[in-house]
Amino acid sequence: MKTLKDVKIGQTARIVKLHGEGAIKRRIMDMGITKGVEIYVQKVAPLGDPIEITVRGYELSLRKADAEKIEVE
Image 1 (tube, rainbow, N blue to C red):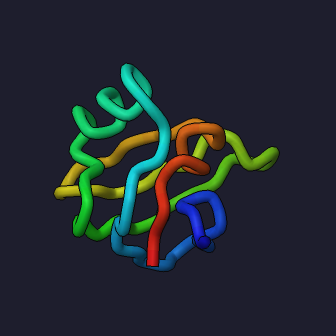
Image 2 (image 1 turned 135 degrees about the vertical axis):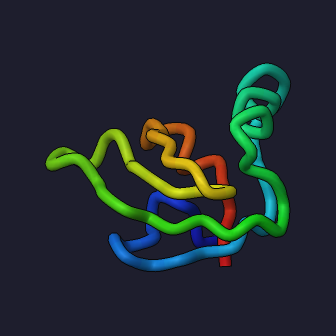
Image 3 (image 1 turned 30 degrees about the horizontal axis):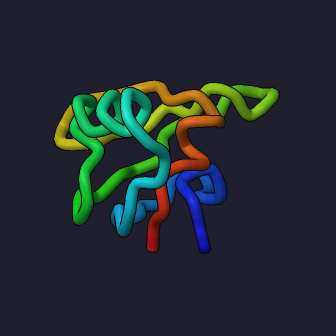
């Protein structure tokens, strides 16, 4: 299983599935990260946290813990 955390800078990935439960999953979905959406990884902080992505035309920063819950292809 490849997660958003594994995607390198400059690569695009498509969301396959969101893992997690309740409020965490709802928060990720409220940010526009849903199944089938393409995500472009722009930057990763020096220590790997947070990750800056582009999704649905806007920029977003995600914690590494949240990125691990997003399965991509």
